[in-house]
Length: 313
Image 1 (cartoon, rainbow, N blue to C red):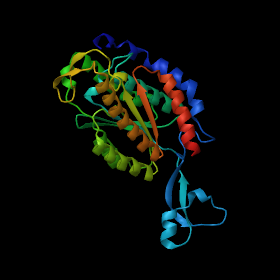
Image 2 (image 1 turned 120 degrees about the vertical axis):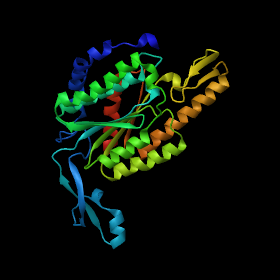
Image 3 (image 1 turned 120 degrees about the horizontal axis):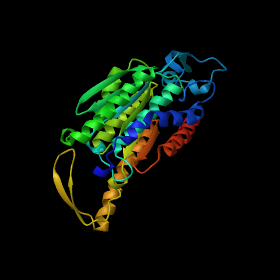
């Protein structure tokens, strides 16, 4: 994939994504609220006794059962709710066999979210984790401040091209990232979690489930984006191949000409991601998979369609 290393795409990011967000931002707004997200104009305050005529959707059944009478949740209007991009950087993001590296997809997504937030006059901040280190960017409406997030990521990308060894040995840190975000949030927020989820196991998925449900119960709105490459689940038929594991730094040789082995591997990987997607959907959040051979504009349209369907539920 060395031939695909290029900084040219970085030069076109601002103009391209400003055009893309202008094209779609009006289609991401629902109703009279200038938010692209359902319920992002209110925050839960307390409960009160049910009054005939109250919207039954707001009945708090747990409290009602405890006191044997109906109670409804009370909300107040909020002037603004911040948006956060929560990014799990790992060594496996510096990989790609198609049109781009996964790190390039991540930078594209962040550029789009920045310009989308700006076009909708929403504050944007970020949490970024890499090798157990965390970087925090305070939410701001200022486009220059938001672009500091993009500059941070592009500088990592540039540095990787010159010092690849430095970026080996970093696995997914999504659980610690979720915990750090939870500890830091002071109010209801809109959260975009971006990771490739390569080295998560069943135990990790169970922990992710608990954390996602906790975020939702606190009235945060979650969008989980999985970045990937087709060859991570659909292995090519190339016989024997020697690969470097970027997380363990170990070199291993695989025999890929066996169709049965390839199918078993594919099913195992797809099953893991399917379980992750189902968990996200059950938490009433939105899941998007974005591969290196896919087009961002196509994914934006998919996001619009899924978000509208979710908000109708």
